[in-house]
Length: 130
View 1 (cartoon, rainbow, N blue to C red):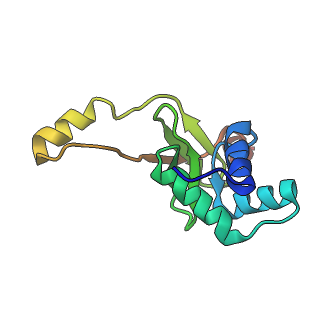
View 2 (tube, rainbow, N blue to C red):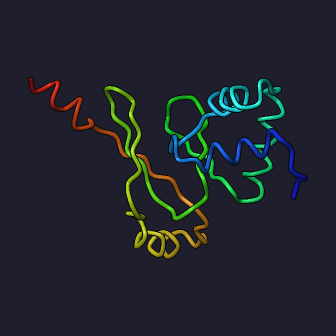
């Protein structure tokens, strides 16, 4: 485990503060700069890489060309609005029973998965109907 630094400490604070569910590297960098008055982008990237390697955060692909990160807590899925891009956590794991079927059919031991639902959030759905 890497030794603490002001940048890595601030990245942890941002991820645990609850201000956002998912963070891109750019958003984390902006947050660290706001809090500390300055920080090198590569230092933020290294802090995130170490946290991911240590299992403290997960990398999430939302299909938008950016990598996002969230705290490694209880596994859950995500849903993204096709219109406004809003992302919401889907509580629990909807694929819990599927992992044994995947193992049985492929012989692989499933160690992780990601599932992203897409659709229209309530606000965008209402706007389209109105």
